[in-house]
Length: 231
View 1 (tube, rainbow, N blue to C red):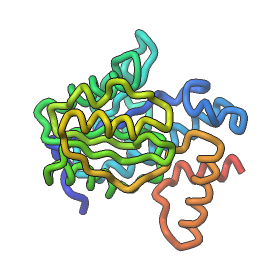
View 2: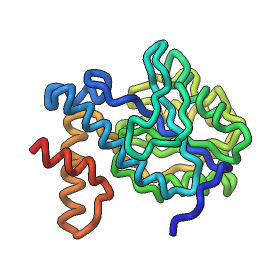
View 3: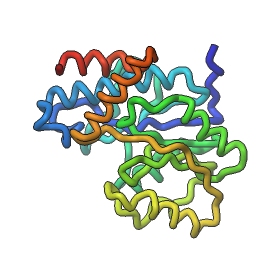
């Protein structure tokens, strides 16, 4: 039986509504806009199913158009989850704003992207455990030079998100540089991969096939079904 969720640990899943032309845009061309939107929805729903067993309080942090309302239960597994709007002119401001708000009254707060469908929930648990063991910041390095997860012991330092060249291979190194300026301690998780580009898509398909050949459950039923549909 999975451990009970606790409000002392708060996890923000950063995501978007699955609308054609607004998600997985770097896969459009290999996929149609509608297929890319279906893929995004499959990633989110598989992640929500996996994260439902994590010992944390799960929130959804939505990237929305101006004036667009925070969605209701548009994904399987999202019913009843608290939702908030990402606020800010760039990813750094959005991360800082969301983590600061969610971190009030919590012992640890984390943000996770929705482009990592194969990420084991155990890695999320390790992030929270590292904060509770004394690390003030925990980073999960992504293979593209960014990070897939950041966990922080509140209060969240604004400096951690300032002057970062977002969406470049310099994100992780620059973030560690900002962290060094704050004097906070760091713990690092195992690296993982995003699924944003056609090359990433090939990595994902190969990863799932290898798991199946090894007799392992992938834990991605919606994503696997979509891969079959796409041929």
